[in-house]
Amino acid sequence: YHLQHRVLNRIPLFTMIATTFFLLVLLTATTAFAPVSTRKRTTPPFVRLQVTTTGSATTSIDTLVKINKAKMDELARIAPDSSEMTRLRFALGFGDMSEAKDALRESVAWRAGPGKDIVTSAKQAVEEATAEGKWNNDVVRDAAPHAYAINQFIKPKNILTVPTESGDLLYVIRASQIDDKGLMGAVSVQQMVDFFAYVKEIHSIVADERSLATGRLCNVALVNDIKGTRQAPDAQFSKALTSSSKQYEKLTSSS
Image (tube, rainbow, N blue to C red; front, side, top):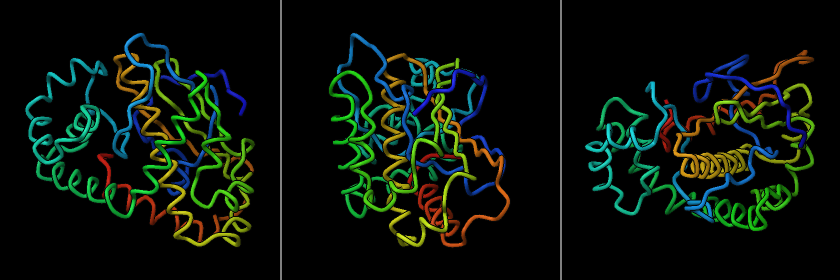
């Protein structure tokens, strides 16, 4: 995928730009996914399904951990095997701790149950994609649920990844270049929901790897490029996006 060099600053996580539903993440890859060099880590951590806004003026992980230590300790009692990054993002994603705890419980249950295969595939795909020190997107695309059908429609020309100057990731969806009707003629709504869950897990892994490598919390902003769009999205595609969004809100600490 071609990396656009224009950078955007001060973009909060999950910025809502243009139409609502298309702001969900689709599979993409550029050098924005390349591993960040670090002497402390050689492999990416595999964490929970979430990439969230900090709701804070600081993005220093050390500072955020100190500020949110009490909340993170409470969350650790619910999910003792969860990573520090997971607990931090859930602590930041909810003002009410009871909501954070409920969301974390649901996330853990989903990852151990219905979402286990998706999570496992994403973890293995990122391991293989970064094995040679750079991002191999073919590995990730081929490992996606129902890739044999979906990858005919989700291609480099309609998805871009742009790293921002501040270190965040910006995902750009060129809606007018996605044949959503053709796509939904090839797959079911549930198959698309599975695909979106896998993609978001990939994004979560990448964002947390960058965060741990730099010491700065990496956020993800999603943008829909509607230039050239002349009609509403396919109803089934919208349904898949809506279902995926509802699932994501329940299983993550997004706000």
